[in-house]
Length: 283
Image 1 (tube, rainbow, N blue to C red):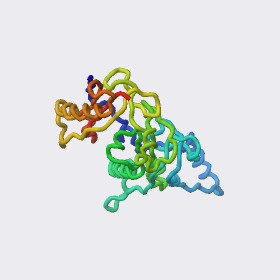
Image 2: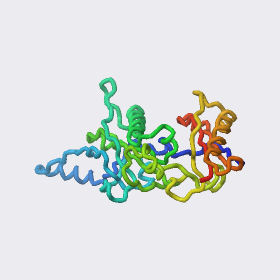
Image 3: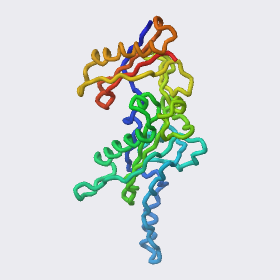
Image 4: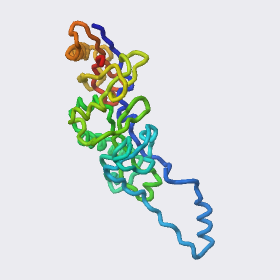
């Protein structure tokens, strides 16, 4: 048998990479004409100021056909598309922001407001896609979320929007096919979004890809690693050796001659909440 062991580098494009936050730029605004309009209103008694209109609350279960850059943008852009057309994202939750603290209004881009969305959208994602904790770890489906821009917030927008997307490969989204709600509780449907690799983990040609595209390795299972503080490289590396070897043996054609791989979290990933490693085997 042969083995692969490597640090868990950039595993999954987790929420930290696919988290949208508020921005001071209004995506709906074109080239500014505010000075001319203000001057005209002041000079003409008949001119009527235009009332500020808040950005509308997004529709739940709306679909979108955006790319990776839009998924990681701070503010949502683009109109929804019919869900029976090609799309790469679906809104699975919409809610109200808690922008009042002790009777004081806080900014939409404050740590408190952004922490609220960063907590609620992943929890709603778990309920939306279903499945076990391990099933969600081994999928390429990800939650992303958006809040209004500062300008939109100033005009009264007070919502957040949670979307589900699937990572096809590095900086590329996969099309969503079929009903996504509860998908990880349906094995045949979940297979489309499972995590695979283009080569042996730890080698130069390795990239994580969705299993519905070409691949040669597959993520089999995960290994929980105990502890609150990072245990150190030696301990996290040792934690999955036997477990991953056994996992690969169980799916191998020849239990005496097989290959397996194990990735463990780096200290940075541990601090971000990644307290498990991933077992791999050729597909």
